[in-house]
Length: 172
Image 1 (cartoon, rainbow, N blue to C red):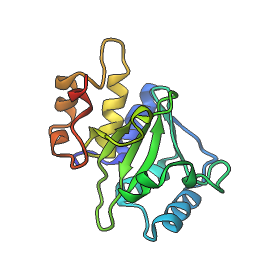
Image 2: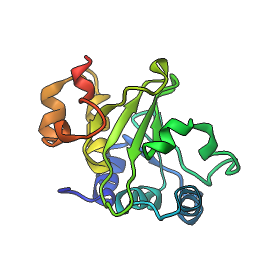
Image 3: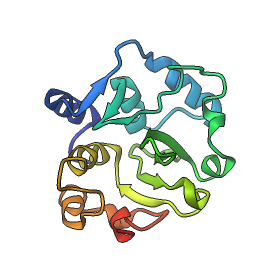
């Protein structure tokens, strides 16, 4: 991972593409995650929670402990928990961007989960959360998209190594 979450968040917040919610409490998010998975969030996800990112380019963030903490994690299916996917952003159409969490890892791959296929076929959105934030900021600019292979690979040359599914641009 070339850039840390804090550096990416600061850069994107200065452009207006990323919003912060100062009232969110990172300890509540970290506690909710730990209670569900039985281990603390990976470093990269922990850092995302610490930054209190509420949205990026109009895509809202999932932030455990920020609202109706009871039942937050239960809103996603058991299938997501089984493979260790944690929603971090949503697109407003029922689809989620999820971080893959594994005990002992620091960096989380990010996957697009399409609710139309019962979450059965995740597509890789980025090989890390930091790279995902950069891709999301650029992919939502006019004329760009997650389906632009060259744009995505320029930011994330490792995306094709993601374990759970092919890059999102492979479906485009």
